[in-house]
Amino acid sequence: MELVPVRCRIPELLVRRAKMESSTSRIKINQQWLADKVSMSKQQLSDYIHLRSKNMRLQRAQMIAYHLDCLVDDLFVWEWR
Image (cartoon, rainbow, N blue to C red; front, top):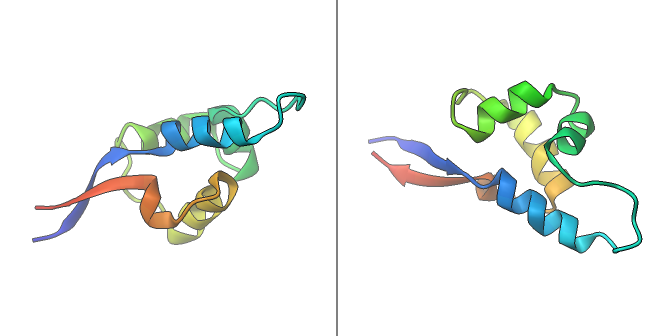
């Protein structure tokens, strides 16, 4: 058995993060914002979100979790298979 990601939670965590920003903030919290924060392309982030690429390095996952104000384990829904 192995633990595999079955669904990415980054989109819903982005929405939660956007709601945390003040309504007067001009920063638009979206996939492009997150990709810029963690120094990666929007396409690479999209590949992670759609589970096309499952080899996310721990350092990158930690950076994403930091900017989304969550734990690394919260980035995906995990299942034993």
